[in-house]
Image (cartoon, rainbow, N blue to C red):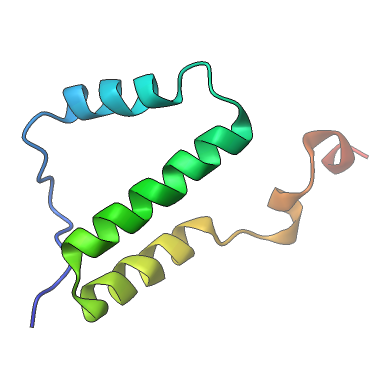
Length: 79
């Protein structure tokens, strides 16, 4: 069964980052969100394996978990 590749696997990470930032340049937040959604779906289709995709979703979900204090704006935390 395939596993999610977690080791660096980019042929040119700097070029990818440059291309990613360029596609978002001068776009609205809504346009950038749509680009990200399309990119996610395109890459998920390329991967194709449901178990690998679920593993990626689980890892991505863990990275965004935070405590309630972290979710509050800094101004509210100072009170």
